[in-house]
Image (tube, rainbow, N blue to C red; front, side, top):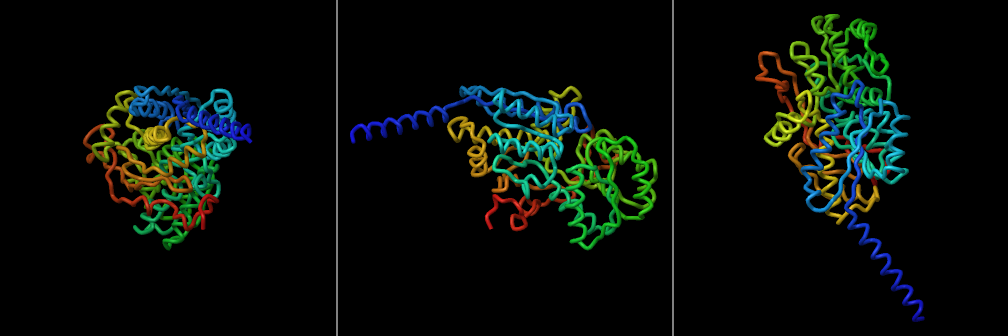
Length: 405
């Protein structure tokens, strides 16, 4: 009996020692998986890696004895390449958390891998709302925006303003399909109707045939269910075809400040769209953006994707500190992240729901006219705010298996 008790005590002591050692582990490795060379590189890319570096510096963990390593890679907007990189990172490089993960096809693929490997993904780049709906995972947090929120804000506002007939130009992959689907639902619910849609390949250069179909439809709203270079090319060529001059309105369902910068105010003026971050929103966003811009080669202001990388990592670091160290257990870390309120200078106070959806306000912006701009990157005027608890898909409508009903 004494031997049994001794063995039991020894086993308990060993388990406690292992647990203590895990809790005191202060080594973290971060992988920024992004588009460094393609049509989304301006809104993610090197800026996302810089945002991660700034979060590491601002966390103050190095001074407390933590060792934080940062690596990044270009997934080329291809799910197979992204998965190969991520698998190598997790298995060999011992990466704990994947950040950014632009492109919805890539995001959904990495979502499955991270769950399989029990790592962590804070997705700030992919838009598909499926990441926190039917394909939600206990290892993933969706931080910045999603197709449901974009549709809910921009789509509803445009229908209420009289844009009750829609024609979609849609990027032919997971993101475009999800954005068209979610916006269609909002348009119909708001009393409008969709009279046509056309799919275009990712990273297209010629939108003429697609725009002619949209023009012929006579729809009041031409909804652009695309992003990055595809959106800017659509807008430039729509201007050449006289679509807006002819009385139709372009709806930028996903527009970034880098897109507006590329287009210029003369072309982009009057566009209505939704974002969850803008550099000139308040003192906190301005202070961060000034530091960010000074370190960017092109002096660009941060996109909401890049801002989300910073914000997400700040919360991740707070979580690891609260846990006493890195436990290298994705589900446990994400559970703890969900239990702690989020609060930073970029997105304000918020929370992470059980489905992994990060909650914060959504802002409806309109692009300024050239004469309204007071200087470089002064592009937006705020025309409406949707509170966080109203911006995203309600849990009552969720198909996420983590949501208990």
